[in-house]
Length: 163
Image (cartoon, rainbow, N blue to C red; front, side):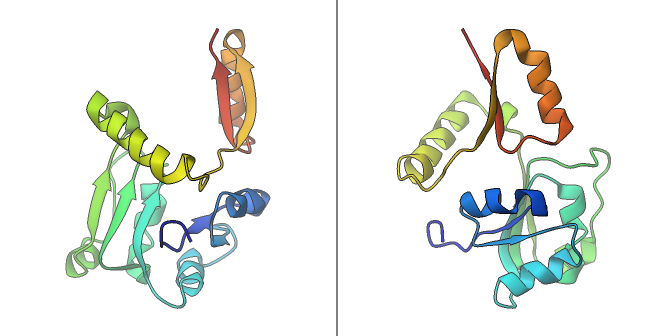
């Protein structure tokens, strides 16, 4: 339990152990069946308070299943479908769901600095977060590093070392 929260992650079976090692209390394979029911079951039969997800388009489709508690928040920082977002407005309205979106590259310098300080003090300094590194490339291998990310085979972060 990180900072008093129960963390339920989604990861393919190939990345299950990586998600557990990263601190997830439970890991659900989103390709193995009814994801919403599995998440609710992993949360002792209850909807969750918050969802932080990089794929808004897929997660928003789960809202009618009751996965998110009334007054819960869905925080999205990406979407597999970058076009018009679609979600069940009635479900969101009558459950007072909140949505929050951000792109880390669009944070102001002050916002980024504050976020880094909070993350560092809460996760890194306390060793509550282990950062998985898949591979480190030199700057002249930047194209190969990009291909590694695009392949979907990276089991952690792909880094480019600057001279």
